[in-house]
Length: 141
Image (tube, rainbow, N blue to C red; front, side):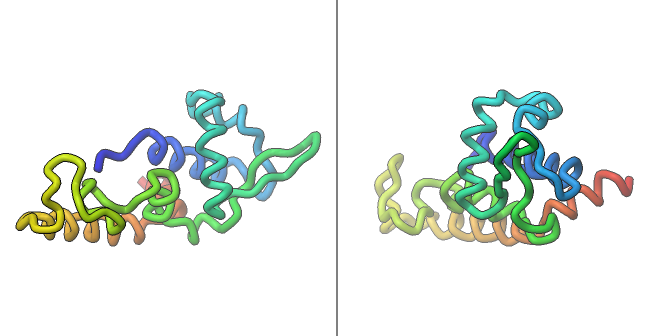
């Protein structure tokens, strides 16, 4: 699995909300400007994060987006799952699929377990890293 910009930009969006939100809604265009990410692309990402329970909206003149959970409760594994739509690092390790789009041997491939284990290892680590961890490591150096 190659992480797409959705996961990378979504993580940056959440970090920005955590740092700049201070329990007040932030307009998406402010995040777009600070992070130098297209507003149109952030709109797509924020919808997935909202549906996944990571952010919430506040409407009105001073509306915008807020974190739906504390930075300590948002782990990167969940962010990646929400934005990528899977926790499989290859097509053949997707739990729903019995065959890989590339080799069509997922059901009897001897090496498939390697990719299954690699997926588990990657997400076990990502599940332990929170938005708070990222912020604290950035400012504690």
